[in-house]
Image (tube, rainbow, N blue to C red; front, side, top):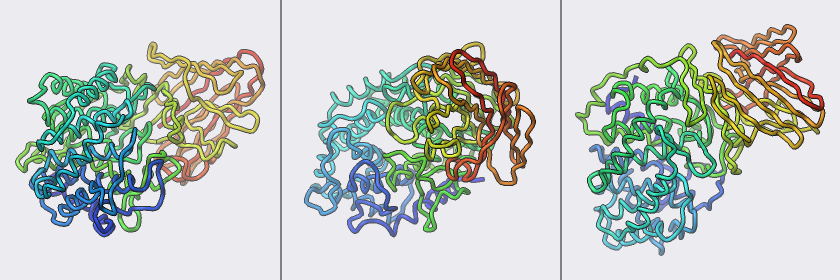
Length: 558
């Protein structure tokens, strides 16, 4: 297992070294691939340049030296902010992707000014400062993006340049308005509960506590206390193996799942002993390092457990996955820091069933795996397969989840851990909730798949799975499928009895049972599941009549 500073550094540069040969002539970008995002190509080049800095800045701050990357960082920053240069990154506009990338640049300037800032000429410094200041002349999204303004202004102040304390304060007030309590934030206005809590909002808050703690001790302490409280819940998202719970958007950032724990160590807060946090980071990094997430030249790909554009968002450019380098913030720690001396400890003893009310989630641990039962708060944005990422009933480290290839058939919809309705040649699943609540160990939610059908679902975790009680009030006849998690279909064994079907292999099993329905299974379209390229799914099929009907379906997930 990776343990020493040298081990972590070696892993970091195994990931970064393939980038060296792909810089543009003026080092303002890195050609990683040819797919596109919603923003323009110049912004995508800036992204590819900046995201490795999430690791390089800490590496330089911790005393590391790497001449080629040092030169690329300085030359690219100077050229990208020079309006007369052919590789100028372009003028930012409202809600511009360039503001996202300013955060990595700003943190690198604060962490390692002797490498990133001080060697620049006065003209270059003027250009960089002027370019970064544009963040105060435009609006940013009302979510975790507000921290980009904060970090950029802190960087400008740190090098004695013009900054906007007013815009920074406004951004901090917006961030405070996103706080729900018990350590949890909502990332914007859609009540989104996802990884933007650990790898963005808390991560940046902890950086703030380090970069501005002396000047603003009250707010810094508040950020630290929120993060410490959040960690008590977040640890339940990790399996014993190091696998983290796949849920929500931006999963192509992969091992940024553990960036929160790196930030805790960096900021000196201890939701758990250092050895426990080190163990989480190390196991997760090793798991990712042994997956086929790199292409033949060693570049990170868009996808999750394997390259997969199907699950991507419209803001995933080829350089986007390198946001994962935020986990290497620990490289900023001095050589004698306790983190490097600590042993990688296993997870502490955790509750078998743990409720997270702010997320409307019940986590269950079975044989070291995590199963998260959730109401599935839906994000009302066209970001890509968004209902699959938020609105399912179960997410797990063992089975992952699937995204649809299309809605034309059950196979292509791959609605695992969903209630699916087939009507008029389409498959519909839960999207927006009408209401939801945690009550007596169950999650109760009301939703409407299509006009004329009202559904109330009650999810209750059991010893080896969950019970799904479904009440349907329908104005039309159609077909309903109560679907299990997906299971890898290699060496699959299938057992069918009346009203029940079990799918199993060496690694696990799923089962769906319903007395009043017809049990069956389907092979999902390839590459729909985030963990496995080929999967199958059990289901119980029910006929929906006009009026009110009640159904109970039992699922086993082990």
